[in-house]
Amino acid sequence: MLREGRWVPLRAASYFEIYGRQSRTEIGYDHERRSAEYHARGETFLMRRLRVVDDVLAIPAGVRVDDAFSALLNYRDGLWSPDAQGRLMTHVVRRRHSDTEGPDEVASGYRAELAPLELTVAPDPESQKPAALLDLSRFSSWARSDKPARIVFDGERRPTLITGPLILGSSLSIRLS
Image 1 (spheres, one colour):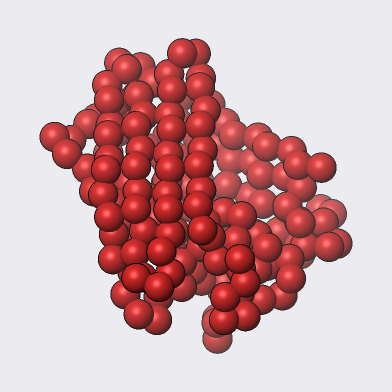
Image 2 (cartoon, one colour):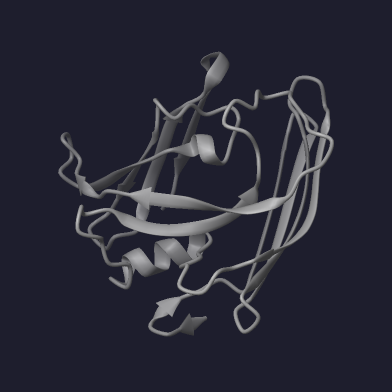
């Protein structure tokens, strides 16, 4: 939905399963009340421990909130302006976790939080296509902040490739066409 000159999310849902380990997230955004309702249930990969979140999060006035799709639409349509340092800044709703959380660690309870999402888009050295680095450690305990993922965009500012190293020798590779 377009609101105040930007794409904003109304609802988001994700589901994936890897080797029988399921993860499901549902987020509802209420822009009038400035809140997000967050529900998530996921299993850790190695020991199948549960991480469950049911929370309503207040969104402070003046804080820009996106999901992956609204952020990409805003970038594609030129509605996401960089700050003075050239960074594209927004926030996304996620499960709160500690910076040192391991892939199989669980807490006694979880809450939702607003996490900063920032990109600095620059030409890719090889292809000269627009590209950006993204710190996935804010969203996955399998990622490390010192090894960000790379997003490559096409000439119409749509993502075509997302790649990144993860722990235990694993990696992420998503091709979009």
